[in-house]
Length: 406
Image 1 (spheres, rainbow, N blue to C red):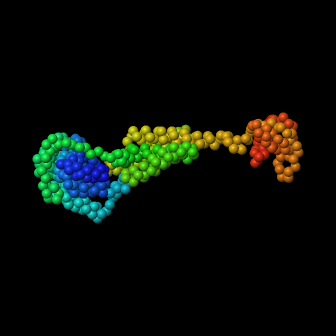
Image 2 (cartoon, one colour; image 1 turned 120 degrees about the horizontal axis):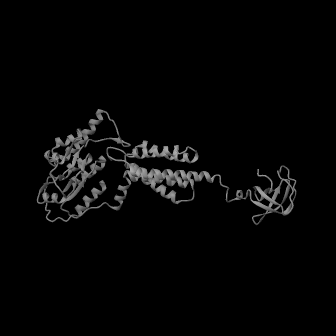
Image 3 (cartoon, rainbow, N blue to C red; image 1 turned 90 degrees about the vertical axis):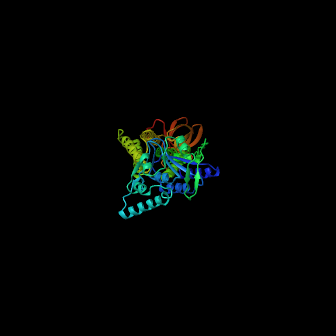
């Protein structure tokens, strides 16, 4: 998002635009990204307006800092801003810090806010309460407390109020806006930015994580399929990228791993569905706990959690049962595949004296259209029916067809 905003400001400067309008609706975000955006707004050669809109939108936490950094701060009806107390979180869980460190963090945040808000003509004392006390303001309260410059009912109303208005820039210069019949050019995200912004959404992250795990699982249990392994590896790498950015709760991640293990055990042992049910519950709990923090304000949705968990359980259990069943299958290639096959004696078995050998008669048999040297524990005439019990190199060990299997 910081890259998107920064790029749009640069493009507007190259096009000699009259105004940059940033429409905001955010619960907040990373402090480093916030500072990057603010630095570009303050140094922008084109006046920047930040407008909290539509109704119900908010400019909270980091969004409040960005709102106050604009040349013109505006809010729509039914919006609010503030609640900008900084949080330190690991894995989506806010850390409890001691009083000394808490004071340092608050003092740093309020000093940063004062460094530009005062030059913008904002009410710094009231603005600081959003940081120190976590206070939030409606659009009317923000206007009355001189935190924002105006309330606009729509974008057209905003342009109308800004037309002909003289605004003071951060460097002390003054610019008069001329917005008669403005041509509005929307700066869209690039395909790369849209793709990356999708990946870091909690729902997509959860889908990529499970798809990656299942893809690699399919490849390991069914070697040579290639496609599942390639897809799974790519999905897992993308999930790791999202994990680097999102506040991931590792308890949720551990529950998902436990769920996959329970699905595999369900295929191996008869539990009458207990292991599968436990796996489904563990994966659902893991999905709900996977991404949850005051920054994002949301995690994996219920619909996505249910829509991914059920297929993941069915696929994992089904594939493991196929693997276990295949171990009992008779080998269909190689010498071992000949064991049990019928054959016909073409050369009568004659006595064979080999010290230490288990067989004492040798002859020739026709096995699947091929002539094989054969040994047997008993003498058998030409034309007798036998079956293979073992293969040693180019010699087959046979028994009379009517002999019981051993």
